[in-house]
Length: 377
Image (cartoon, rainbow, N blue to C red):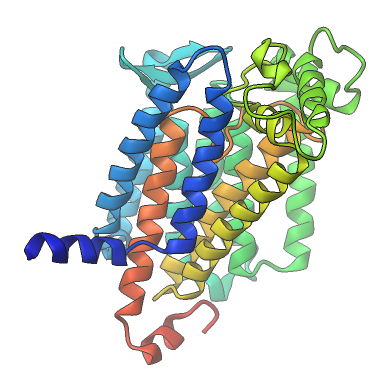
């Protein structure tokens, strides 16, 4: 009897629309991997999906009200900063970026957890200061918090993850109610920062990727090769796709990193425009449900944290799909729930578990308290 009650309670935590959409997107990723010459990616991905499911269920049971305490958030933030600093000593290089910790059987990428840490610290900072957002000081201070992690990741160098950190900060600041004047200042400062990074931070291969984005056909055998092959794969899918297992660009390995960075192109080549449309609808449902959770946040902290999580997913989605169809430079950003790899899947499961637990707590709160605590009240 207790076992039945346990399972009933567990399933009551799961939002059906959200979880079905996540599972279908994950299935799309597995289908693209299974059509390759080796099933090793599918086998490992199934293990990581199992681990991620366990992480989601465990994190869904935790009462996260303790995260409202400043000392807890500060400790998590400093822990992530220290870990990123140590990455320059203990990190393993992969494709030119020293952003992985090699544990033998598998490797982990701390930048995935760093994204959640940025969401957490920004949600905490603005949860009590949203009424003072008109002061540019709070925009600058929050920017400093994000910039520390942004800089440490950029120096690895991991341009893609650093870009996501910047987009997270921008999204949470927007949700906090920034003025148009301050928004213009941010764009100007951003342009100056990009110019400075181009001169003093970006590596030669990163400059080549951006140049190939502006002139994609200028060097299709060199810096523009990945983007060129990706656009060929996407375009060759047509309306209905070539069929499962008949994606020539990925199967013949013309398409690089077809299981991670360019899995969207490998998927669309086999499933076509119809498959891409279904995928877009499923991802829109995922974001819709997360934003629904945000609208039910019991305090500003839960609301801003959940919006930050949605920003992480949306940023990864647009950057990854953008580079797959040739409208954004290749940056090595994974596609949520679909790309091969354990680090991003576990981080995404943890994030979903946290927002689910926060929503579960909000349902137990009296509606009058919810109205008083809601963002902008």
